[in-house]
Image 1 (cartoon, rainbow, N blue to C red):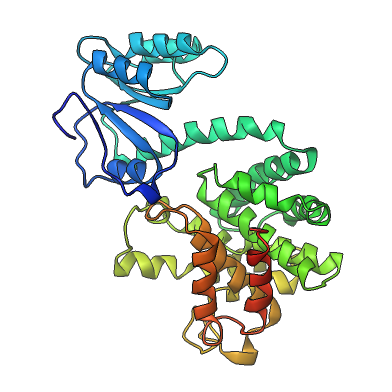
Image 2 (image 1 turned 90 degrees about the vertical axis):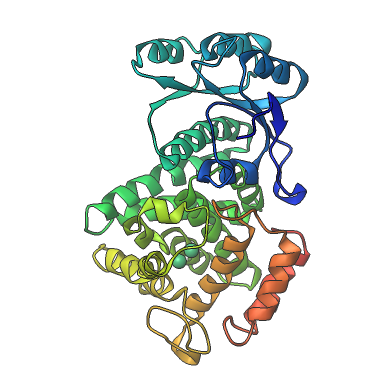
Length: 376
Ligand SMILES: [Fe+2]
Ligand SMILES: [Fe+2]
C-alpha cells in the first residue's frame, strides 16, 4: 500500500464503478488478490491513519469501510461508531479487522456498530469471502423493492442453489424438486417480461454459482421464448441453465475466484466440470435428458475442438447449442474475480466471431436480436 496518508488506488476508469469504498487497514501489496479484486470493482480510497479515514468519510460518499481495529490516532471501533451515527437510515457497511481476542468485535457486531469482522491472520481468499458476503447481504436487502415475481425468483434460487451445491458436494445426486421450484417461477417471470430486471439485479451480487446459474437460466428462458418455444420447452431450458455448472461444486473455490489466469493444472481441474455436472444429474431422480445433455455439452464446439467429449456438428443437439450461446454471453457480461464485466455490444461482437466454428451460426443472430433490442 502507498505510504501517503490517503491516496486513490490506481484503476482504469472503465473498470471502476461509482461505488466508493474506504480501505483503512494493513500493508496490502499492489499485486495481492485483495488489491486487484477491490481495485477492479470499486473506487478505493486508502487511509493509514484514523484521522485521515474520518476526513475521507466526511468528504466522500463511502458505501463500505474496511477498518483496522488498531488504526493510529482514532481506532477502528471509534470510527465504526461514528460511521453508523453519520447516516442512521443508510449507513456505510463496516468490516473490521481485529487482532487477538474477538469478544469486543462480537459485541460491536451484535450492537450494530460493525457489519462483519475478521481476526488476523487470514488469507486473501478469506478476506474476500467475508467482504463479498457482507456486500451481498446489502444487495439482497434491495430485493424486497423489486416486484413480487422477481424477488421470489431471486430468493428461491439463492436458497435452492445453495442446497443443490451442498447435496452435490456430498457425492450423490440432488433433489430435482429444487430445480423445478425455481424454473416454475422463471417461466412465469419470462412470460411477464420480468427476467431482464432479474438479470440487472444479479449485477449487484457476487456469489459466483448463484449469479451465473440464474443468469444462464434467465438468458435461456428469454431466448427460448424469443425463438417461439412453448412453455414446457422454456421451462426445460431454464432448468438446464440452473444446473449446467453444478459440477463446479467439485472445483475448489480458490480456482473459481482466482483473480488471474488459471495455470495448466487449475485449468485441467476446471475442464472436468461438465462431466461432473453430468455425474450429479445422472445420479438425480427425474432429470430430463435434455437438461443432462446441456450440462454435459455446453462447452462443446461445432468444429470438434470443445470439451469434454470433442463432439462436432450434428452430434451437438439444439439444447447444447442454446446453452453454449447463453453460457458464453453470460460469462462475458458477468463480473469475475479476474475481469470486469463486458459491455453487451462488445460481447455481441465476440459471439459473432464465434458463430460457425464454435457456436451455431443460425442461432447466434437470433440471440443477438435480443441484445440489439436492449433486452440484456
Ligand atoms: Fe461450464
Ligand atoms: Fe457456465
